[in-house]
Length: 256
Image (cartoon, rainbow, N blue to C red):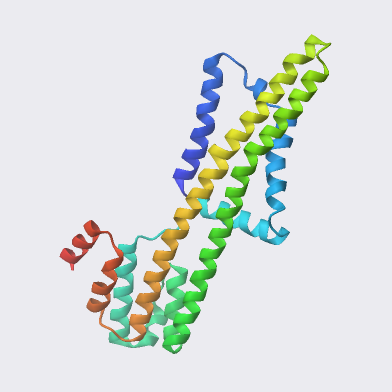
């Protein structure tokens, strides 16, 4: 579970709730069916119009899963694991990998291909294709939440216009002016909250995750290919250290 996502989004709503109570208002005053329908449902369906149904559902699922669950393995731990696997291959041969449990699915797939005797270029093409498709799915999810973040304020403005029209249409009845103005302002609020507390933060997180995953997958591919070429664990470690930030690189070189 990625705690930062829940703390960030939950904290954003928490700040709003605290502000409402500090102002002396009731939470029920800020709940409106028209605003919910126009902004939230409206943003969802206008975003859906930009995708196929299958693409929309897949991108939504990928995005929510990626930001809710964090399976990230540090590059330093990954390098050490790859060096450990290289040592096994040097001592026991490729078949020695079959008895090793590997948590990372992508690395495990590369090791299975080495154990099964696949050629170097086939391993490279297969792993690079899987990496590219994985990054593409994250980028599609990023686009979806970006579209949603851009659509929400627009739909909020639509709701505001609906509320103002209703208010002006009932100028002869002072009792309906206040509720009409409240609805008009609530839709603007809903649009701003949905965009800035939910959709756009998720979109930015998916963009960052895509960049991180691209680096991690490329590191694994380079490590797998070097193991397939039967390079020594020390050489593999030295070559993969370039993926680390300078401070972590120095610490790892000292440990080695």
